[in-house]
Image (cartoon, rainbow, N blue to C red):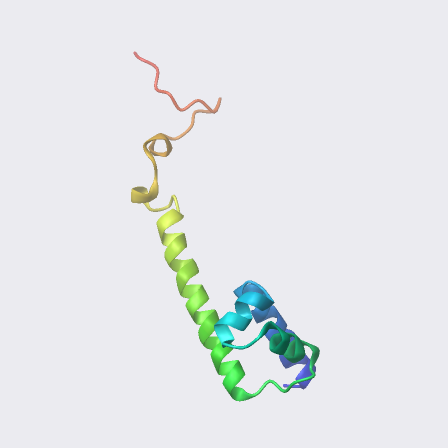
Length: 97
């Protein structure tokens, strides 16, 4: 892999983590250091890449857990109003017979 490709992937990772401030916190470095890395002014060494990989995995785990708690595909995540499918007119109420 060339340097430019690696920096671009690192930039995508920084964006995915939540931006430079969040990435700096995850990498235990200053935002200024993250900017230097993104600009190619400092070398992306293996330790930084390993730390970013761990941060991405942690972020993915949090996202997966939230998805499992929010997804209406799991019946226990639905509210009482969401348990009744909407009618074609959008009305959820059940009319008496």
